[in-house]
Length: 118
Image (cartoon, rainbow, N blue to C red; front, side, top):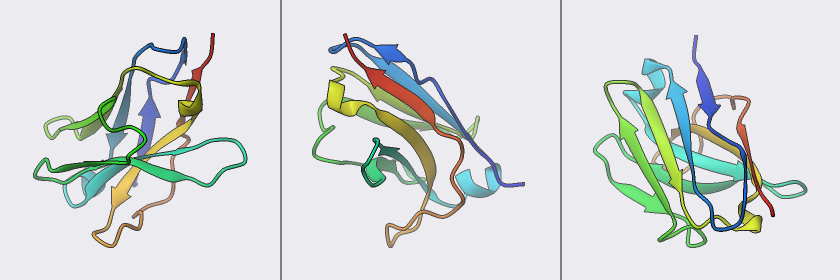
């Protein structure tokens, strides 16, 4: 059964840091690039960062220099390290596989909530 399980979200003050984790089924992790996405209330889901199976990364402009995506191939896990968090980073964060076209590959997991507030 294909699974995507996100964790690590929390309430954090502006300027703080968090590390999100996404445990993926091997059938996803071994085949596809992986992406972190987010969806804020009333907004569309958007891509935050992606990483290929070979470790090539790409970031949305609004997180460049603050967020770092990485993957542990032995654990089928992808991470998102988030530094210098801002209130506008508040959202439900998801991971998924990513086709070369940019489209996501599988049904969404439950996500993990990140709230940045003082």
